[in-house]
Image (cartoon, rainbow, N blue to C red; front, side, top):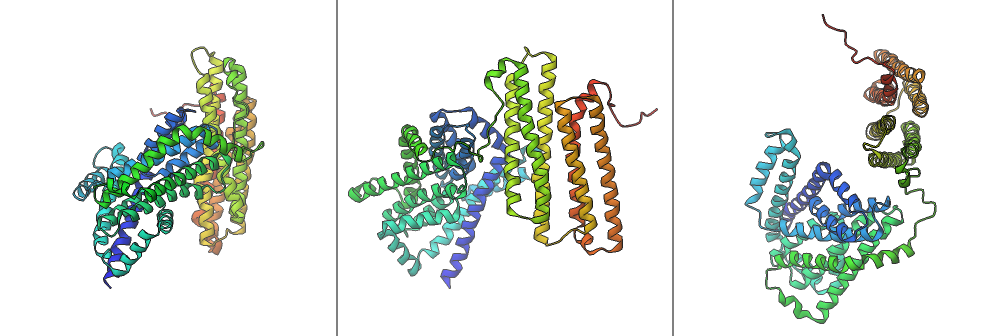
Length: 550
């Protein structure tokens, strides 16, 4: 009975630890994610700078796996060379080990202060802009509290005979101990949480130095398996980086294991308590990975490139096709190339519109995956066009070229916003419909399809206007928006009439139906924005729709 009552607080502490670490990671990504990605992209092909950036990212995100996934996303898009990406992942491992050192400091007394101060800031008691920082501090307070819970729970559980017998068995079987460490890390999905929990367990005296060693080695191998398992369907650039990380960590674990096997007195060099030994060994392991991995990153990446070469026609790896760096010296050519690239963005948003309707109808995984892929491609291409035009900009540009560059950025930005509405609003609505198991009435689905067809036609018209600016076309595009607004009102009125009649399908899908109409109208508004520069140049647009007050 005592073991059962002790296991529940232990489980609660571990769950809180894992959740709080992920909470910090999500808050840091939301607050600093774009900045971290921008810096990572700027380090380019430098292995040393990439390694340093990996350390910073993993320390900030509380997760080497999360940092590795960001790095591989850049490698997939050829922002980083394979060797720089490998070096960055090795650095990420060290960054997470440094955070383990900081979090392992005795913080029981500090936890209430972090929770109180961070929670107060996160609730908005100070400036609104300080909320994200307060949430991060609050997350650290949760980590400290979780560690206190785990330590208190383990002090009782570690005395149970069955628990002691299992730990003794692990200590005498290196391969079993390594496997258990790797498996538990995979289950927790966090090497930071695993090492901290292991340190708390070692602090009870239940583990000897050998058991600690093998479990730490297993945890480090398991941490390299997490991003690999999350990227099973990724392309060769991602697989190369993550396999290099696994090979490096497995090789280092083997080296540590052999060293202790032949020279067991090495463990006697540590005079600290087992809990401190766990975090110190984890740090030493990752320092060794970084020191040895940095100079070997290039040959290791080259070897893996031979094993997993890029496919000649790799459709999974989106690339720009018309943004020629050499054309930047000729604004006319550069703008023409950017316009052709913008057409690819428009094509993908148009495909997203069609895939969204298929997803509402069939709720198939193929449409969902297509939507996710297309949205990533739209985001990538829009960012590339924006940065390309930023490099083109400058005082040497003529006014007409500067205006065209601005229109290109406006065009692709509005397309990207339209894609976000599809990905972040329409797709969740389709998932909700599938989860609730409801279907639209025949009249309701017909109204949605007609609204969708009108927006798709407007999409075609917007593309024609962009590549052939014409005042008459611009006016027609704005008129199309007004027609879509009228169509939405008619569809809403029809929907309300069906509600009054008590149509079962309409009652079940009322909120979904109205939200879909609203989102399609929002997409129409973004498409219409493409006409405004043409209308403004001709003085055809009013500064305000409000009537003047006498």
